[in-house]
Length: 467
Image 1: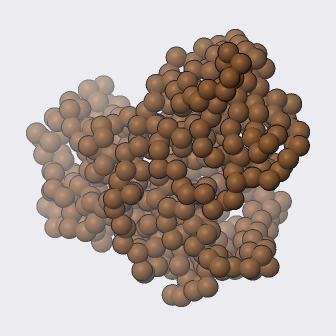
Image 2: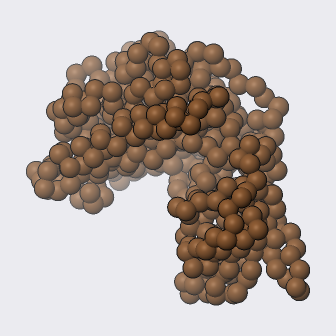
Image 3: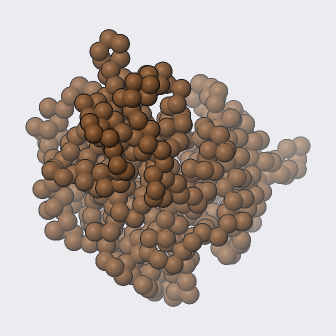
C-alpha cells in the first residue's frame, strides 16, 4: 500500500448510527485485509483508493485514520468510479461487487453471501436503534460487566456479516445480548434414569442444582434456555416424553439470567451456563456437539495440574474451568440415544467470575474495550478518559504484560493453545481503569499439542475432532 498523505479526519468523529455505513465499513475491513492488501491499495488526499483486481473496479473512501497494519478507520460513504465520476454506493452494491470479485478470484460462487449481508445490515439497524433509545444499568462491577457483554452492537470488525443470524426479530429482541435483556431459565424435571451427566470432580454440579425448584421424587433438575425450549417444542420425541411424564415442564425460574456476547451462554453473577441454541449465528448453528460436551469435562480434569501451575506462574491470570455438563438421554425406537435432544437440551456449567477477581476490580469483556466506536463504559475511550499519552502507553503495556506471557507459557511450557480472541478474554481493571487481571474463558477452542498430551490424545474417542 502506498501513502502520499497521512493527514486525516480527527478520530473523534461521531459514531455512525446508520446501519448501511456501518455495514459498508465492516465489508471494507474484510476486503482490504483479505483481498487487496498491499498491492491494490493506495492513499492520497485523505482517501483510501481500492482496486478490485479481477474486475478492475475502483473504490474510494475518506480515511478517519490510516494504518500500516491493514486496519484503517473509515469515515462517511464509499464511492465507486463510474463514467468518469465518483458515485456514492451503499452496502448492498459493495456486497455485489465483492461477490463478483471473489467469484472471479476463486472460481466458485457463494449463493448466500448477499442474503447474509442483508440480514446482518438489518440486525445492525435494529440493535443500533435499540441502543440509541435505551440506557443500560451500570454502576456496580456486575452491571458494568453485563453492559460490556451486551453492547457489541456492530459485531466483529473483520467478519463480513457479523450480525447475520436466523430466528425472528421478536425472539432476538427477547433473548439477544444487544437487546440488553435478561430472562429466567425454563425449569425441567427429568426422570432420574434419563439424566446423563459428566463431572470433573465431586460436587461439580452443586452450582447447577442450587437453582433447582422443588422437583418430584424420582426426577432430577435440568435447566433449559427458554428460546431453545420453544425451538424444540414440535420435536415428536420431546412431545412423547412430555406425554409420558419422562419430562415435566416446571415453568420459568425465579431468577433473571443475562445473555452474554455469544448469545447462548448466560450469566447470573455466579456462574455461566452454556446452552445449545438451534439458530445460525454468523457461520454456525450454535449447538453443543456431543464431543464438545465430553471435551469440556475431559479438559477440565486433564488440565487441573496444568492450570494450577499456570496460575501459580501468572497469578493475575485465570482460565475458567467447565466442571460439569448435564443433559437428557431419551431413547429412539431402535434403542439409540436421540442426538437432537441429547445435544439440544444440554447445558455446560462454567465457573463464574466472583472467585477470580478482587472486590475492587471491575471485569469487562475485551471486545467491548476494543470496539471501534464507544457503546459502553467499557470502551477504551472511557477507561482512558483524559489520559496522557504516557498513561495510554502504560495501560497498553500493562494489558500486554498480563496477556502475552500467559498465552506463551501455556503454549511453550504446557502444550496448551488458548483461543484468546476478544470475546473470550475478560479484563479486570482497578478503580482507575488500569488492567489488573486477565480471565480466559471457553474451553471449546482450546487445543493441545500432541507431544505434551500424548496419552490423552491417543485415547480420545473417534467422534472427537482432531486436536
